[in-house]
Image (cartoon, rainbow, N blue to C red; front, side, top):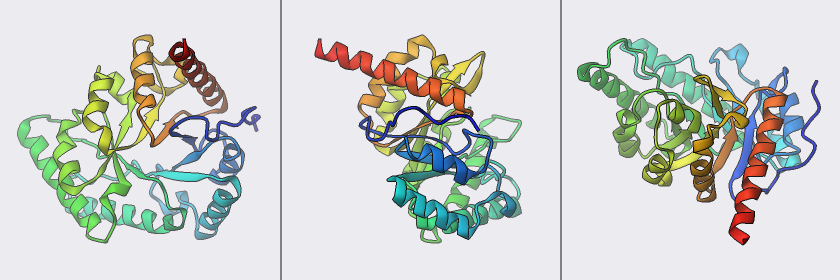
Length: 271
């Protein structure tokens, strides 16, 4: 296994700094044991919904104990293999049941947020197709919240479609926003304008680099023109910032890049 970060970043920033639970090629708990010593929070990656892919109840208890021992919190990335906007009612119901099951399972961890992809898988982007998808998503989210789940604990991630497609759903159901900066860069979105519009609803920011139209790479690959806008956003943000990268080298490079940029703006401010 690769070595851990060489220094602690706990309480280093005005936001809570996190990274994914898949930095090392091992299960969640070994990753948490290492990373929890150095960071404020861990993003628990639960990309697959099959029971075999999810933590067991004893593992949740271990994660709970690690959180106490390491002064650590968690956020949860919900599965990618579900669709709350599918035309099939059965598939939508399965997605709702899956999310509820995972939230119930992880309840002892008191996650800061549960990040959800509202994937748009339709081939057509015609208004009628989008409207039908929006209606399906709304019904699914309404059904999920009917179980007593607080909408604010669900953060809807910015994906590769116009975020306005889900804006009314988020507002109507009092949901939160996950601002994935890499995804927004791929769409040529003005980051500061987006944050200005959704800052009050944003509970978590996914931060990573973009290179050759590929995201989730080291933050070193953050486009130069986006560095200042990102830093301005982070200076105003007090939620969770997750370095959503995978692999030790990507994490270390990202941590050092963020630290260098942050120190740079601090020095300029003092000057």
